[in-house]
Length: 104
Length: 215
Image (tube, rainbow over all chains, first blue to last red; front, side, top):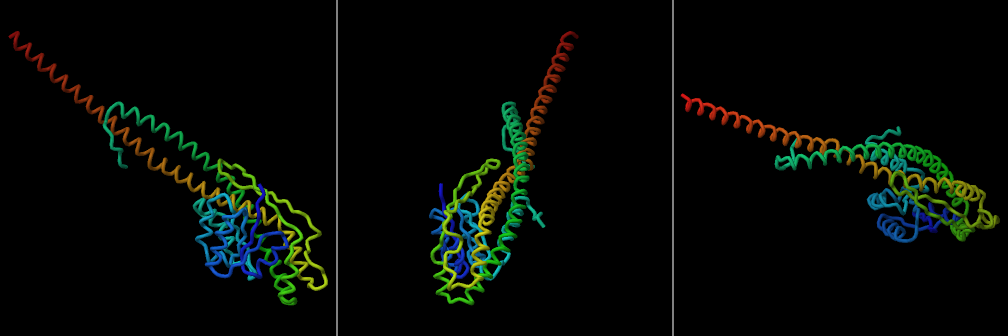
């Protein structure tokens, strides 16, 4: 089944992704980000990329989608560069599965 | 370890023995499942980490390009240049089964337009070209990242669940059942001994009675 890809972030960060054919949504504060994310998840999107800057405002909403197969919510660095939250997510997954962070 | 609250009867003993065998078998199976899942998970998560480093670097570079482009161009021109994409991406989602965990697998198809640049070269700066080019190059990795990261999250959840079950069986369920079985066996043995002594006592009394009659 054909699905779409969305990018959620602030205006300048998501601008470029439009050239890839992604659907871009803008949000600037926690409230609108949460609203947009929930709307996107209900629609036909398989992957939602969200900038780390926005993601750190709504960690609970994102954690809620962690255990469902779709959509995959993936953090990407925004225009201010990487905050390391995305990498922390990888280490969190390891810690959850193994009991200790063994990736180093 | 607290024992289960059951009647110390033979029937109960037989039932508990059945349960402990099942629990042991379940424990072994779950442990094997956990070990295999852990192996797969570590492979996926290493790949995930590698992809994330790669993608984050590429995206930071692309963002820097867009930053410079937006500095030299007016926001309206930039907006206009990127407004109509030449291509669209469609994602095909299929499911892959890793140790009975359904993980999504993405394969994408681009409807190919005329090159990656959705704009004429007249009014835009060169930095934008680089940024757009960089973004389109990182696209396959970006999708792979989505796939592996989601798989890692789903597997982590399943492993956590399985580990809990394994531990519950190993440290709670099985010791409790064994303790209960021991308690019942001891109680039954005690009854048996009590019965035996009572019989011996009665026999003694009968013999004594007979001896007195003879006298």
